[in-house]
Length: 592
Image 1 (cartoon, rainbow, N blue to C red):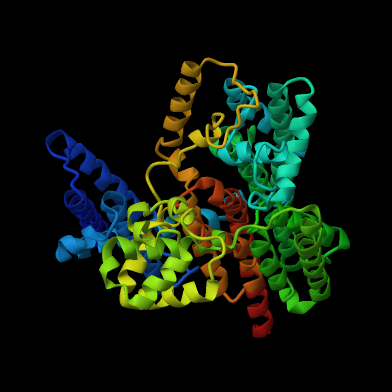
Image 2: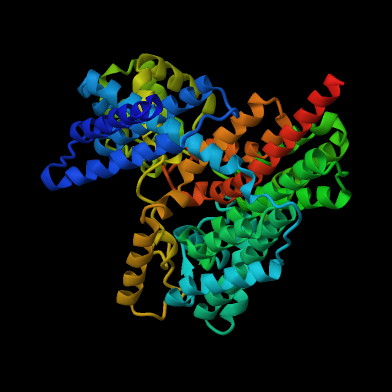
């Protein structure tokens, strides 16, 4: 006979499967007759999550259930927004909604426990350093990336890359600005110009090759460092082939645009932070000046390569000031001051002297302007005379904001915002409108950001970094890819299908990495091991930056989260084991 545990698993699995069935129905998805096997597979899969989701002592049940319920609500709302652009599902049937949310919560709870259990196991930890040469890792990455590079020779260019080249060569009427970071524009333009002495195709090829070498070197260094943290070779090689074969990194490597190197620099900065944690908390070794210098250099690269980079670097360094009873606080404080001083001097002194126009202030208002536009779409008649007057001063034609509103991208609304608008006045009106219709503001926020924190079944599109974009492409730059378009399109379809294949789509899921990182972060906070939580700070700040960005779910904004999350996850078991050893040693001393 089946025991109580098995019956509990069966009943729980049935409830979750019922919730998925109800969700399909209220979403307008109909699976009947031959699709009954679909539900059979769901039931089997759900039962297996129950079977293997053993209770862990890493987090209390109430905390796991709370996080799971939040994820469940986010998933449910994201399905509603993806189908209808609003909260239609939430309002359709209250009983069905409750069943769906709680059944999804149970499923997510099981998955959370499985994930924590997977990374907390010490099966990936070696008793000694199983050193892997960075040259071997580098060779694997380059060979794998060639598979993706050859069909798109001489390389690819994203839209921003087109604009930066046109700006560098003076093909843009406006003065050069820091909208696209000036340092990245200079870097891309100089390399392209060197190759351009032969022709434009060679300029792109030269840039692609140099970028492949730089990024492969960075990822090789990071993965090699993981092997020195006493990880088994199987873990090191698994991450190597993950980075080498999946389009998340391989398609980006030969693409001319700033985010390829930013993602690599971000990973390198976090790896240096991990080195600090390992030295202080695991190996009890001093933080050397060389390691601090690496933090400064990588922090500057992150700061200069994307305008929001400084926001992710400085808070992390400030948190390091408090590490290990403030033993090294002076070194980290000096590092913070140096980065802030160099970055600030460049922005306030160097750029103005070169005639570089700073970033438009409206770039920071993507979220408020989307909320304003949604308000205008549904509640334009509720505006009072003062609000109308101030909106007229803020936008060129505020009455058309409702028509321009696209919940997933703010660019159409942004171009209607005046460059010289008064910030304080607009924010005052924005607050008063939000008080009138707070639900509208919440829907605008969720509808424009949920792809960054709601795990989706389908992988994000990589097509934007597989071709030479038509966006901002200047006819004076003569570039063409060698392979026939039909062949390139077929290859793009192939790798898109691979990216969406079950398990692969999980491995490159930005939002899933966000939640896994949150779970690991909560473990360290719950155990009051705050130093181990520091590497999650840049990840959290990047998520916040993505939420404030003008586009929902753009993986070139959130892509830096994936690699760093994997690096931390592979060290998670080692750190948990170390914390356990320290606690056991402390308990033994107290018993004596």
